[in-house]
Length: 179
Image: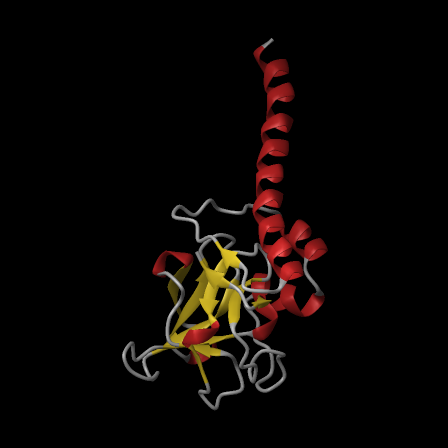
């Protein structure tokens, strides 16, 4: 009897969780459609977006999946945001979590969008990356664990940080600001 109950309740829990995730994404997509002085809420608590690799593959385009889920890197000067100078908010392409403010973006000369900091520190996570014989600090979306890029200690003052981020890991909400 208990086993039958679990078979009934588990799909309901999964359905409820997927509906909540879609709700938060809809808010950002609604903001994109408005495109004018849109205020975006920053969550105080991060709820992990848990999906299978197959679900991510179905949701993301090929290049974004390669970067976000397989920790790849786009070619320098090839992304659509490296030379963008519009007001707005950059969100994770996979889960739509707001990550970077265009006001914190600067020209690093590297060919990737570069920021002095995230909107708030709890929106990104960092971990040591020893791939390719180098020691770097990888930057991940705190909500979906998508690979965004790397952070270096050679940025401008006041932070001295350079968050070097792949364009294909981001969506841009033009004219948006933080509530």
